[in-house]
Amino acid sequence: MKKAVSHARIEKRAPSMAELRALKRQSQKRDHQIAKSVDVSEGQMLLLRPKRLRGAKVRWPKASLV
Image (tube, rainbow, N blue to C red):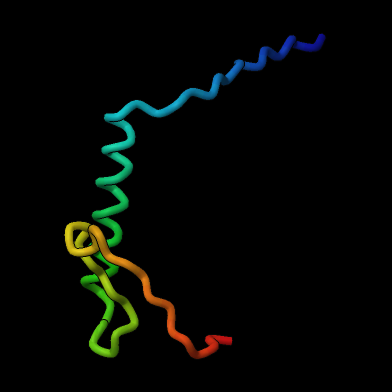
């Protein structure tokens, strides 16, 4: 005799602000751990605080990058 299998219906919903904040904190913690463990003395990684970037303008070099 076969059992009827019920499939739970999963509804997609937007995450709450609390969930988004928790995800952001997790990402930041991970990024800080990576930054602490990497030798950046040769400039392979550059971390800038958002307030230092506000109003910044990107100037592309005139030389070809390809």
